[in-house]
Length: 360
Image (tube, one colour):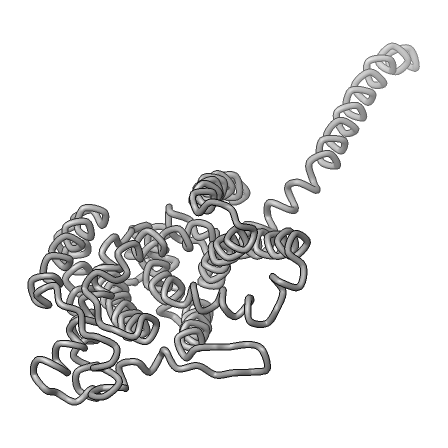
């Protein structure tokens, strides 16, 4: 009876060797990939981490090249002043892109809202306390129309907002007759329109109320997106609208509310724009839509929807501001700024694709 056992033993040992070898190979692969995989999962769970890392590295590089000239309180707060409008408009763009949409009309809505505020105050003689809410109503109406066309009519967001951009841009010039309301007139008649241009000095730092508005808006939206049912629904709609609908989310109503709120935020940017430039100009903020998309993409918010952080958008806007100011202080041609920002955009999209695989 002992002979069959002895004959089967070599085969048993051979299987054991194979299993041990396979286990060793598997453990080697795991050890080899674990660091990269853990880092990718960390980036996937913390969408704003990439933009924060890039921001810190950018500050370190320009700080090393320029020294105290760059790290002065005035220079750093100047960056905040330069990106305040982009940050506010970028907040509106963030909400839309999180739903896998895009809004090309944000800049035009911002400018039209500012023109309405100015024209109602000067053409119709309304007090600024009433003309400013009229600008917010204008922004909300434009956003509402975008939302209805996207949610109810099922039209592509790119086409809808491209058309709205042209319509609002034309309405802006037709309504204003392409006339600028000068800063001196606003100072004497409706100074409240320039409210966000006023500043607060803290030592060598100069913070405008526009910068404070941007920071407070981003903080508010961060809380709403992360700690309210409405915020969770925004991510759900962007991730999978059909699954969101089946789970009880009214996707159409959500989309309309997102575009409408985006329009209101653009109106806030329009008010801040008046404070920034001092006047009401129909030609101001022509690249706000592109700048807002740039901030969102560099900020690590996925163009495919359902993933990202509003903080990342602000970091993305600050990265653009750091590059702009740093290269200007170095005396380089402004085209280098556009070149490097373009490279960052492509790298950000490539990084997003790589990070998304962590979810698989």
